[in-house]
Image 1 (tube, one colour):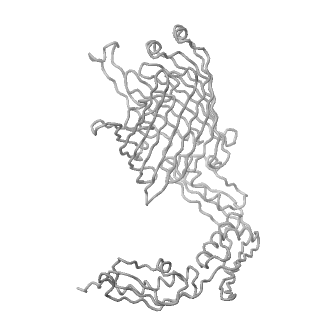
Image 2: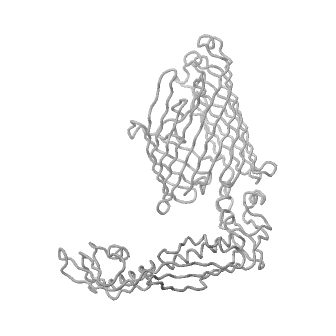
Image 3: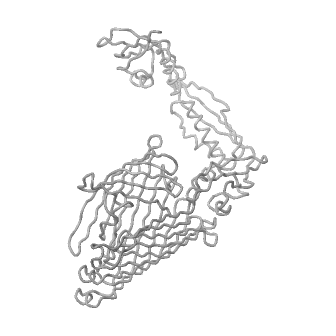
Amino acid sequence: MPKPPETHKVADIEVVGNFDLPAKELLRFFPVKPGQKIDPNALRRAAGLLQRQLQANGYLYAHIDSVKLERGGQNNGARIFIYGASGRLVKFGAIKVVADSLSPEEYQSELSIRAGEPFAKNRIDEGIQRILRLAADKGFPFAEASIDSARIINRKGQFSVAVKIAVHEHQPVFIKDILIRGNTYTKDRVILRELDLFPGMRYSERKIAKVVEQLNRLNIFKSVNEPEILRVSPDSVLIRIDVEEGNATLFNGVVGYIPETAKTALGKSGGYFTGLIDLAFRNLFGTGRKFMVHWKKADRYSEDFNFSYSEPWVFNFPVDLGLGLNRVVRDTTYIEWQNFIRGELRFFGHLKAILSVRKKTIIPDSAASHDLRLPLSDVWSGEAGIVYDTRDDLLNPRRGLYFRNSYSWGVKKITGPGYLIREDSLTTRDVLQSVALDVEGYLPLWRNQVAAVAAHIRQIKGKQLSLGDYFWFGGSRTLRGYRENQFSAPLISWVNLEYRFLLNKNSRVFLFNDWGYYQQRSPAELKELLYGYGLGIRLETPLGILGVDYGLGKGDSFSRGKIHFGLVNTF
């Protein structure tokens, strides 16, 4: 069996020779550091690497003659001696770009090189790649660029390199057609209208690079491949995009019946139904239209029902219109009805405006009117806001930013009961104003690991606020480790911190830490800072994306943790 090579611990490193740069700076390029153990046979490779690093950083005439190792250094360690010379530092001189079609000044700015900076060949190579990307974005995808000449100039012992780069764009290229493959259900026009491309336009590398992101935002495809560029003539190309359609229809139903018992019969007759029904069409008739129905009844006293419909690209403009209806029964306290119409106008790829009109009706239980001073009321309101979204994927983003800010103004009309209006001296009309802010950020770290941060704020103001005007939070979508909608107040905020391990395109496991805060001043001052922590999973299944979170709230023991379970609905 061969004997392993002998290694030595490096105590110190000494530079011997004529070097123009300080030893400390030179040793930054040397791969061996004091304290490391090294095989003497590796010193030749280290010397070669040091010489190449010096030459790549402007010392074109650098040479390392030898690297020697001697025993008997500090603490019986080994000493390394580096022999050689750096030569004079060579800097960039004048850089000239000549081109056949586009302005040389446009290309010059892409180089990001200034005269007087240390010469580095790799910076020219990187600049040429940026030049070619610019040419491709301007309609010349088959352009060529290379160093036409490079002259070393010596002026009074100062060395510089004058470089001339030649760009040959050839003839401009146009898109002859765009071919979509794999869409057996979705209509071609639904896909093509999302792109910044159309037949007859000049080729644009930047717009083609956005195709995958733009189609993923539709949230109807399982996968979208990078576009293929097929040259069909010297001046035209065919763009081919392969897609795989996902399951755009979701149905999930669980219904149970709780029979009458001695406990359930108190004050009520008979048993009752519980359950959950989700029905969603995210690509109705292959047109991109969306329709959703949701019903949830957790117990005898609570119920949640909502319906919504969205029509995209109204009259072939980038305008989406939607309408919906919500009905919420809050634990026998009151029934809330909401009807709304909303619109979204896309200005640019990532920016859009939102507008909505909403009517909300609060119908309180008689006990809630008396004990909680909750009046019967109608609120008509309008909302305006902006959304900026650069996330690379809506379901499982790797990177990007989401920002939403809106302002709402409404008129609240109190219609009863009469005794409450008289006893509390309520006016029948009140003006309500509210703001909402949502910010999310996603940062890729190591392979398939993402840090996610989200912050949310809601606030409403009015002279006669009541429970029906408050914001509710807690549970799987806001503050995990607590019951669904456990807290309510006119001012709420929460922060979600997650460290995610991505399993595939739509699946992940993660650790989370949530923080929440709420505050109200009437009828009594009340505020509290909350926190929750735990772990969760999002797993893609044939029925949809299954979500399970286990969270612990403030003061919870392990046995009192909350499990949040459901199918993720992105409609």
